[in-house]
Length: 301
Length: 247
Figure 1 (cartoon, chains in turn yellow, cyan):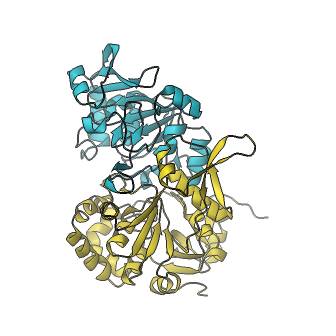
Figure 2 (cartoon, each protein chain N blue to C red; figure 1 turned 90 degrees about the vertical axis):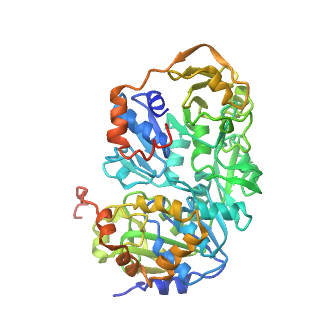
Figure 3 (cartoon, rainbow over the protein chains, first blue to last red; figure 1 turned 180 degrees about the vertical axis):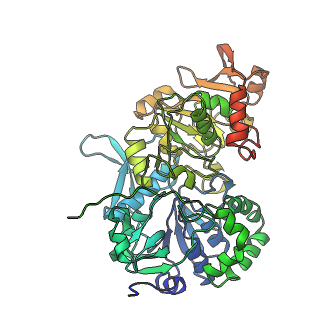
C-alpha cells in the first residue's frame, strides 16, 4: 500500500505555491533541508518563510530568491554568529520581516494549532519589540484586570516536517528535540512529511506515545533519508557543526553563496545524489553509535 | 569571565542555559562545585548531561541521557512562565546603565544599521527567571548609557520602574566582564563591585559609556584555579572554539 507516499519533487510541485506562507519546522533538530533545496530547485517565488530560527535553510532560500518576507524570533547561526544572507537583505531593505521572541512565535503556532484566535502571555516589560510589531497587542485579563500580551494565530499554508519514521499514511514518530513540529503540522493548511524511514503501521502502533503527528493531518509522505543534513536526526546522524561554521565563511560572499547553491542545490537532482556527493569522509564523521531506550510495556488488553 | 560566571551558580539551581559562553559556564559549574545543577535548554531539554560541549543549544548530546524532553511551547510556558527557573544567562550587543539589553538592532529598527539576531528566548528569560546574569566583554560600545533597542528588561529606568511592572524575576543580579563584575545598587544602576586580578577601576570606567561608579570597597576576584582551567581547556573546550575570543 503506497498511501500518501510520493517523491519529494512531486510533493513540492503539488503542495507549495508561489506566495505561500511556509513553516519548515524543527528547532536545530530535524530541519527539512532536502525540502528547502527542492523548493529552490523548483524556483518558488514570493514565499513568506516562517521559522523561530530561520537557520541556514532560510539563509539559502533567501539567497536563491525564493522569499519576499521572513517571520522569525532568532535570526542567527546557532553558536556561530550572524545569519549573513538574511541579515544583509534586512539591512538593505530588500526583505520584509516580522519579529517575535521565541515564546511569542511559538505561542502564535500554538494558537494556530489549537484553533484559537490568539494566545496570551504574561508581560515582559521589555516593550520595544511590542512597539515595533503591531501584531503584538496588550489586552486586559477579564478575570484579574491585569494586562496580558497577545499574539495572533499563525496558520501557514504549508508545514514541512522531517521525522525519524512514518507509515505511508503519515502517522509520524519523532524523538529527541521536538521543538514545534506538532504545532506546525496542526496549524498549517497542508502538511508535507519527509521521513528517514517508512515503516509498517504495526511499528507505529507498537509505541503510540511516540506519535506526534497523526496521518489524517498529513497530505504527502516522502521517503528522504538524510533529509536534515547539515542539521541532524537524533539517533541516525550527527549535526554537521563543521558545515555550520563553514557557512559563516561561505555566506560572507554573495559569489561563494551562489557557487554553493549551483554546486549543492541546482547541481544535484535530489537528496540521494547530495548525500552521495558529500562522500564517505563526511558520512563517517556524522555517524553515531547506538544508545537504545528501554522498551516500555504497554500491556496486552 | 566564564569561570566567574560559573561561580555564581548554586548546586540546587535550575538554570536556563543559553548559547556560547553561558553554555560553557554552566557545564564548567556542573563539573566543579554544582554537580546537581539542573540544566534546562530552550530547545526543550530538561536535566541535560551533555557528554561533549554542544556548539548549538539544540545539539543531540543534550538529549541523550537527559531527564525529559518537551516542546518549545512547553519549555517557555510550563517551565519559564510558570516560574520554575532560578537562573537565566543573557548576553547582547549592548547593556545599559540599568541592565537593559539590546540584542536586536543598532540604529533605527525599521532601517537597521546593524541587524542583530534578535530576542530568541531572552525577552522572557530576563522577565521571569529569578536571577539573571549577563556575560559580556567590557567595551565602551557595549555599555552605552541607554540601549538603542530594549530587547529584554533590566531595571528599565530604575528599580522602582521594574518593581511597578510586577515581573516575576528580580532582574539582572550581576554583569560579568573580562575586567570585573558589575552589580545593581539599590536604584538598579550597575556599579563596579569587583575587579579581576591586575585590572583597574580606571580601565573599567574608560570602557563604560556612562559615569561608572564603584562600590565603597572593590573586591578582587579569585584567580582561576588549576582545576577550573584544566576542565575548561582539556575537557570542555579543547579546540578553543568558545574561548578563542577571550572569555
